Image 1 (cartoon, helix red, strand yellow):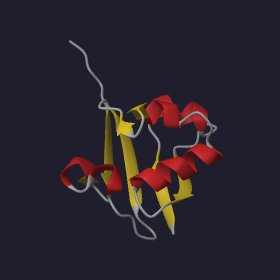
Image 2 (cartoon, helix red, strand yellow; image 1 turned 120 degrees about the horizontal axis):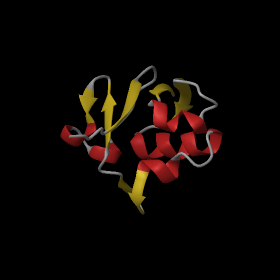
Image 3 (cartoon, one colour; image 1 turned 180 degrees about the vertical axis):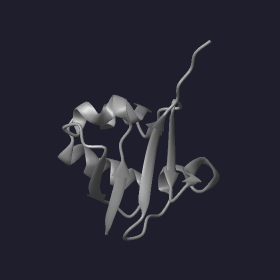
Image 4 (spheres, helix red, strand yellow; image 1 turned 90 degrees about the vertical axis):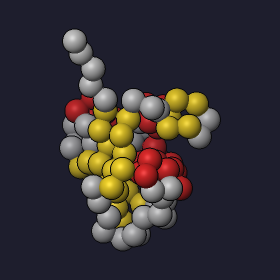
Length: 91
C-alpha cells in the first residue's frame, strides 16, 4: 500500500528537499523502515533508540496523533497521509 509522507524542513536533506514522498508499509514501523531504504539516514532522526520513536517528533496519520492510536504499530491503509512534525522550542 502506498502512503504519502509529509517531511518537515529539518529532515528534507534526506529526501532531496522533497516535502512529500511516497512510501509503503502496513504500520508506522514498516513505513519508516521503507522510508529509510529510499532516504538513507532519515531513520536515525526518527528514532531515539532501538524501536523507540524520538520524543521530539509528532507523527500524525490523517490528522490523528499516533500517541492516541497505537503508536508505532498504528495501522496504515492505501492512500493514508502521514505527517512528521518536529517539535520547536524557544523562549
